[in-house]
Image (cartoon, rainbow, N blue to C red):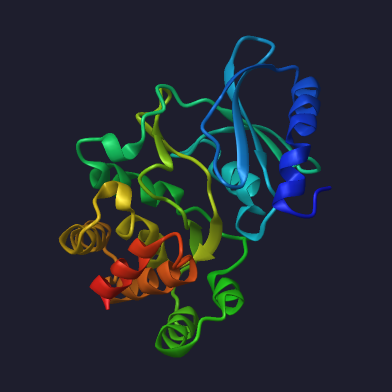
Length: 252
């Protein structure tokens, strides 16, 4: 299997062809591609519309298929088949596939969706393990370790649930996609939403999302704020995501 992202990209056409043959798919139009995945519309042999997704194997996506299986279509896109050797997923297709960010009240949708995703986290990598992997330093590192050591009630959390990872669908009005799963406390789940620039990028908007999510979901605001700072820093790249630094400043 490919060792680097560039190697993997060169392998994608072969992997797509092999998965299409294995699952008897008719491939149609590709989606806009992300940095570490390839997705294409695929009709099943019985005409059912699906999506073929190839994932570059990396730490955050290792248990994507496991999370989709655990949710079993409850608030998330349904997994139809998996090929762990090729890191291929056959998924339910979301139509029309509009991003949640375009909804009149995206936070209202998420308040209803999040508790449905908080299933048993048995078997998933823990947030404490992820904090150790991040190896953050200084004040934020100390905050991360303190929060990790004092969590209460771990559940399955989608740690990349931003405004473009929930799509309009037909089976349900909105379905989550592209999970980066962890076993974590519920307060951690709001971090990607609070910093989601697709939902509005300003101090008032970020703080407003934090306040509303915690109020309506009964979460500890200070722990949610701390986790947002921690994960935003851990996922930051100063060169390509300067807006992350602004979110950290607004919440600090």
